[in-house]
Length: 209
Picture (cartoon, rainbow, N blue to C red):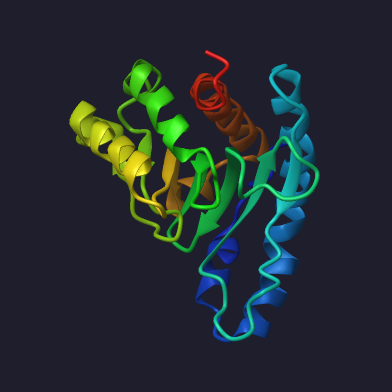
């Protein structure tokens, strides 16, 4: 498949004014791609053998005024709901694409997750330097692991352990200028490689290691 998967129009959806107009564009341009990725990668993640994964395309159903600034498809080992579980995401902001493993504020086991990651920090420090970490899924900014270093990882894990609304995200960002150059096969391979590198982190998060 040589057709490019993502387009500038996909990313420009998040510049459209108005909730209804942006949601219509999101449903028309981006969500069909999320549904396709959801089917493909829930099967791939399930084949890893840790859990059976199910896709969840963000609906943004609770919004009544403010249009979404980002959107995603999540993968979690539950048919209904994913936010309370460690989960994977493929998503877009207006500036970039992200592929991440996420522990967000609804998760009830953040202290345990922080302790397990602290005991097995090598699964994080051994990731490529260009992979990112973040403590807030509501913000597009993140820090590359190479810039954060072991101290930066430690601070984020400490916050996850002690602050009620703290979060922990790890994964990969891809600038939209680079994403739109990828064919469908290129992007699938890129996402597969990213998930393969994040799955050992997931194993630590859920206590498998």
